[in-house]
Length: 184
Image (cartoon, rainbow, N blue to C red; front, side, top):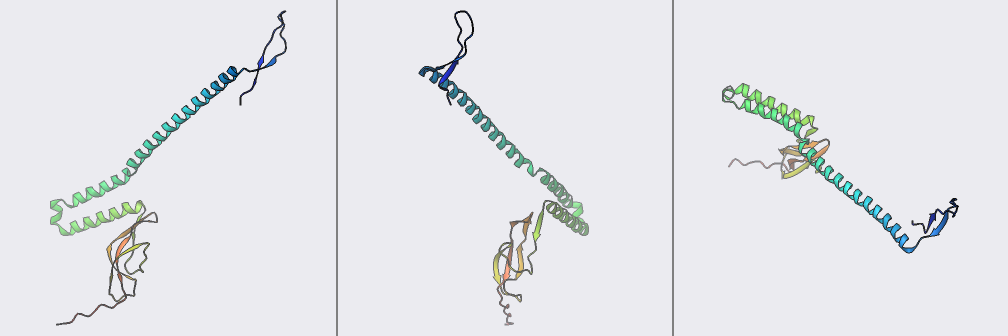
């Protein structure tokens, strides 16, 4: 808010200082004072805008870098699994069927361990009641099970930290008994 008066120091002809007097500002003086305030506010505003823009750009860059590198540790663990697969596929190992099978089983357990450490869990579906939150029905088939019971898992489903990342793809019983095949 602009003050319409200014304080002026006056002196007497003898050099003594008189009390300060308030004098009304002229229109030009008011304008110049307002212009100075405007310029100062505009300068502060422009600096804040530039500072915020720099902050936003820096934040985007940091987030992008974080996203790129977030999976680095997980990828390194998968590299260990990949190395073990490579060892298992070595021609000399394949000759000994039993050790090959044992090696693949150990790699499977290692892979399960890596996923479990990341909070990934397999959705158990076989024999359970169909639940569209966890399962995706790809087929309704006759079986000896009750209607809406899962009788086959076509593709396993997984959750990560209690969030479904892939529903289990299943075949569900339609409640009808399978037809007997004729011996003709």
